[in-house]
Amino acid sequence: MSETNNIIDLMSSEELADPSISAEKLLRGDRAYYYDLFNPPFYILSRYNDVSSALRDPETFIEGLGNGPNFVESNGILSDGVHHTYIRRIVQPDFLMGSIKNLKTRLEDITEELLNKVEDKEVWDLHDNLSFPLPVIIICEILGIPTDDINKFKKWADASIAQMCSDNPNEFEEELQGLEKYLLDLMFLKRNEKEEESLLSRIAHAKIDSKHLSNDEAVKLTRQIFVAGNETTTSLISNLVWRLLSIDNLWNDFIEDKINIDDAISESLRFDPPILGLFKTTSKDVDIEGSIIPKNTKIMMHYGAANRDPDIFNNPNVFDVSRDGKKVLSFSVGIHVCLGKELAKMEARIALNALRRRFPNLRLVGDGERVGPFLFWGRSKLPVSHK
Image: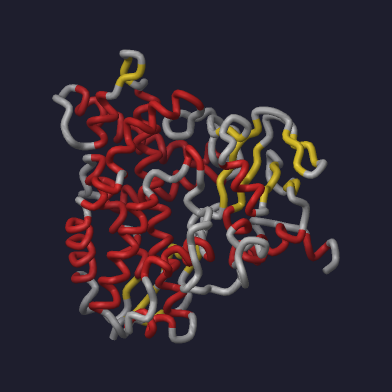
């Protein structure tokens, strides 16, 4: 293939529509690919072993300047060292397996309520009616946030991920100030009350070195959990249904219980990672096969490419629901592994089981629409019918 055809443009219509094109080009190119079509430019790691090693080296590849391509002073979960350990201890109990198992019945009830609303519809949207509201409702309930205006939360979640990927983050500042004011008002209410079970209350009352978290950090931590708690799960559910319905006989095999749902979830995460990659910042010069990546440089850990590395996965461009999913990197690894990964998988499992039980004749009505930001991969619209 010519040099011209191997130029990577993550924001091109072609590569946005099919990120596997970017992955294929990256895996043929330099191990540390210099991407200069964004301001500021950044490097991309695409080989499985390079990405895995970097994720396990948090002292060299740091979080504190944000998980997007822009340099943003961050705190909360997006922090480093001892501070990150303290913050994670505050929020982790709600995402341990014991706590998550207690949510199973509630998740099943929410799913049934959502599907009841579309039961009589000829065509409905899987994203709008199921894969978006399900995780938003449960993360709001975990946090202790009212769920009476889910459309407002949708706008705020969309603005948060758009800001993360934008070359003009200020464009979304006004919208997100509304979210932060909303959360800060709730935080003040919780601080003036006795600590109770909700995660928001625990954040409001949490102390490090005998001091409450600053208002800024408490709000940003809540915002991080809210956004991460719904965006990944939403696309996991939509992406998996999309593939099962669009690849010959897979939905029928699923209906007939010929497919292990946990294997299908793992393969969906590998083949269609809801987050194609996240960024770290180098704390020192890094040498990768003779390419020196300078200190204070952004590096994209490209999960989408690493999950298709042929040195790790056989026939990586084939969607194979019988594949062993243990090596999939989509939830990261190391100390920054996704807090909500088990919750996300449970939500997907419950949603898919409910769909096949209630709507065995489910079918696509077109391919829908892609989510906007280049770092994310999923359907913002996915029309379906079960009639």
